Structures are given as structure tokens and as C-alpha cells.
Picture 1: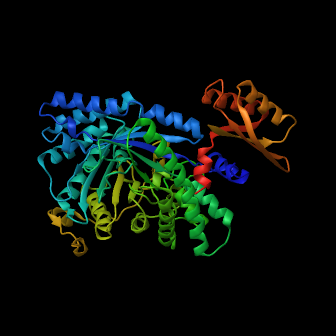
Picture 2: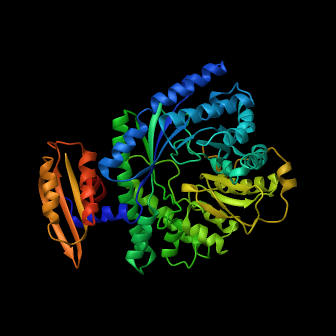
Length: 452
Length: 89
């Protein structure tokens, strides 16, 4: 029998430190749904999703009971819709988003991702139509998430797409203005998008994936924060060791659930995403981990170094615990979803400039940041361009999920509720990026993209 | 199939008896039992065999958890593999 202390440690992680499986995401390929007839396309998409994911929620519930660990989200990701509905016009795409919503409702999942396009080098007519449809699609659905890949290390940055996405964010914010522009919480702009990420809003089912696949995202910032606190004062070598050991344990649970879910659903197991994903709940915060390392507030000098070490140690611990690691794998720093980040932002300890620096060393990017509603589209595009450049040059994934909250300004705050949390509106630079964004075209791929 | 029953809370008379009775009622066989008391804080771990259990897993879990609520204890039933995965390589 396992040692009594080990058993109590596990129970304590779940009971006190918010350990959970953040998501079981089923990736579903929609390539076999392609049709030149819109009606037929819609029927085939609906049927494919509802049939493939029929037992997803009941299986997750079963595993939750069997192992006594909460499984928070059940989700589906699909092939980027611009590839499936390439013939559709703007209205046709909006209808496809509504089909995704209906399918998501039918199978009882929390979110469905993949309403997106890959435009890192150029934009097909279908991709342009899909991008045009995003504001209406997100305003008329609740569960559909959209992600657009505007750059890659191999292709460079499609600045036309960056410029367009600034405008799309503004329109999405306006169309969902009665709900604090929440549509923008379901829209992410990526560089180097991973094709097997189980987390929203950026999950897609990539082109090189099998017909269906199970990806699992673990979590557990509270567990890491407590482990660091328990260890007390120690040097960084020891600190890294504590984080690694904790990440190993967390990931093993994810691996078990992924393996079991894959077996029960008769669907291949894809990857475990080793991410520390916070929630607004007290004790489930990445910022608190950094603060437990000795920073007075998340955002002060030293934060980037602390986050870099955390991110690296999580990967090193997790990678041995799982047979396949993928997705985003790293610490998330979504401002509105992290109680410690919210607090730091509210008291002025954490600025958007510091957040940008932090994204150079962690997974994802500028995430769930509320900005003034009167921010111009070109300023939003400027922020996107900066963040995307960090990803392209450093050969990593970065992303932008900003909420320009319609009608609100600096000093006010916004309440999204649930896992999306709340956030103060952050201050941006007052100076214009308009002439820069207007140039259009492509920023060439960096020299280190030429690896062959 | 084996499951681990954990009982955590304030110590009182008859905790083991109550939990054991619940197990016997459903033909759940107790394989191993260990407990420790730190000051007033009580922790008991039972390894049980549930192959011949005469109810389903979530019912058994529900009844024990109800018993826990009545006695002011946190009682959980979890499949042993979660502990094996986490603590054994």
C-alpha cells in the first residue's frame, strides 16, 4: 500500500490546494465534412462532432468520480474552420459558428475551439471571410472560441493580418458591449500556434493530427505555491528541485486521466499539456507562486527571472511524468483569471510592459488583459505586433487576448464572472502606432528560420 | 480493483466502526487499515477491495461522504491508481 503520508499529500492537494485536471479536450478532424453545399456542410459538421464527442462528458464525469479529482472542463477542438468552409461567405461562416455552438450544447461541453484560420504568410479568400465573420460569430454564440495564427518563425509576420485583427477585436468588443465586451475573451491572435493545445481560447485540431484525439491539460498553481511555502528559505537550485518534483506529481495524474479517457473513449491519446493554469479562486494563482519565491508583488523587478525559472522547472518535472508532452506547456499569466495578478494590477505593481517582458519566458502571452474601450484599432495591432514578434524571434508560441472594454477607461474594472474572473482596465501608451501598422505586407522571417 | 478510503477530521469515538460497518454493508472487503492521530486531528486510510461490492462506486462514495458530513469528517473514496501514479515511478 502507498505510504500514508503520500496518500494524505494527494488528498490535501485536491482538498486544500485546488489540484484539478483543467481540461479534457477532444480534437476532432472535420476534413471529411467538406462539401460545396453549405447546408450539407453544416449537417456533416454537426453530426461528426456530436457523434465523436457523444461520450466525452460522461467519461470525464466517470473518471472524476473514480479517481476523486475534479475535471473542470470538457472541450472540443476542431480543424480550423477556414479550411473546412473555404467556399463560404461571411454569413456562411457565421452559420458554421452557430452549428459549432449547437453541437457543443448537444454534447454538453464547456467550449469548442477551432473557429479560426492560419494566415501567417497569406490569406485565402475563405480565411479573409472567416476573419470578417468573427465579431458576429462570437457575439451570437457563447461557447465558440476563435484563434487566428498571424505569424510563425518560418514564415515571418503577416502584418496585413495583424492590422486586420486590431479592427476585428474592436468590432467584437462593440458587438458584445452589453456584456463588457466578453466576445474578445474568446478571441486569440497567435504566433507559432500549437496544433494540439487543449486550452481555450486557442485550441485547434491541427492538420497533421489523427481523426480524433484526446489531449489533457493539467493545472495546479496552488500545489506549487504551497510546496514552495513549505520548503521555506532555500537557494534557487533547491527551489527548482521542489518545483520539478511537484510538477512531476501533478503531471502523473494528468497522464493517468489521459490514458484512461483515451481507453474508455476508444480515441488515441495525444498529449499532456504541462501548464500551470490559474483560476480566480484564492490559492490557485501563478502570481502567488512568484510572490512565495520572495517577490513582494508580482510585477516587481525580478518577476521575469522568477517566471523563467518556474516555467523551466515545470517542464523539466513534467516531461518525465508523461509519455507525450505538447500544447502550450508552461505557466499561464492571464491577468483577469489570476487572483494575484488582479491584485497586483489593481495596486499598480503590474503593468502591461512588464507583462510583455514576462511573456518572453513563459507560455502564451498577453492574456485576458482589459484595456480602455477607446483604444484605436492600430494601437491594438501595435500591441499584437510586439507580442507576436517576441514569439517569432524566440521560436516560441505567443498570443494576444485583449479586451478593449467598450465604454470603459483606466481606473474602472470589468467583471466577466466564472473562470474568466475580473480585471482592472490597464493603461496603454498614449502615442500612436498608426503609420507603422498602415504599412502592411510581411515582416520577413528571422535569419534563424533558415535551419536546413 | 482496489480503492483507498481516506477519513480526515476531528477524532471521536467509533469512527473506524462506522466506516467499517458501511463497508461491510456493501460487501466491501478491508485489506489494510492505518491511522494516525496528531493532537485532535485524525487521519485514517483504508485500502479496500471493491470487486464484490454490491452497489456502484459512486453510491458507495456518496454514502461514505454522507456519513462524513454527519460526523464532521472528510471521507473520500478514490481508486488506488491515482496514488500509485503520483508517488511511484
